[in-house]
Length: 229
Image 1 (tube, rainbow, N blue to C red):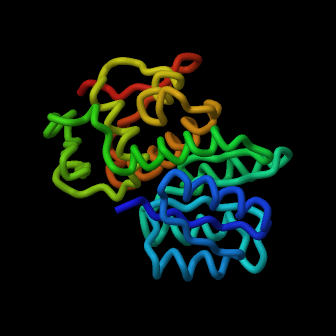
Image 2 (tube, helix red, strand yellow; image 1 turned 180 degrees about the horizontal axis):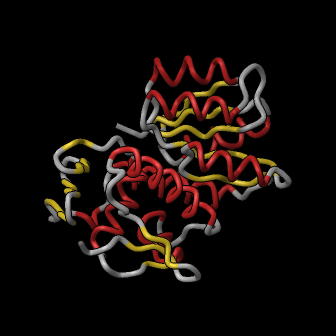
């Protein structure tokens, strides 16, 4: 079955261009023109990926992202204006997987779609790795589950993959560039803020679930690491 992608944008020219190129790549395309319709279609059609513009009628894209992230782990790529840097940062912190700045190239968008879908389906690089344990953390790759002292952690696919990358190299500092390559993909076009925003979300969840442990340590000027014990 082809992946189902929901385009959420109120600019007909953008929607037409995205739909045409996604359909040519054999994706099943759905369309919503405002925030309310986006939520309705996302709940009913259960797309595999949402391409979400931030400037929408009725309910803006940031609020749509916030609501969807509470309900379901569906990958989200944001579309933002070139001068809306604060919106990009907020969107990433709310749980968007990636962002594309308008105007964008079709090639860039298609690579991002491919990478996000690949990650949400599970990376071939993880094949054969059944589980990883670091202190009280246990990660079951086949089930895509992370547990702390037996309790299941509620993580998005991106957060799981980021935690897995750190756990696989426990005790070793990983630069943001290394995390980009490992989690987002070697041909990722974006910047390092995506890593920082995802780490911030992941760290907040971990602190709520296991306040007695510091599972992600910032090494200033270098990157992040998970203590070996």
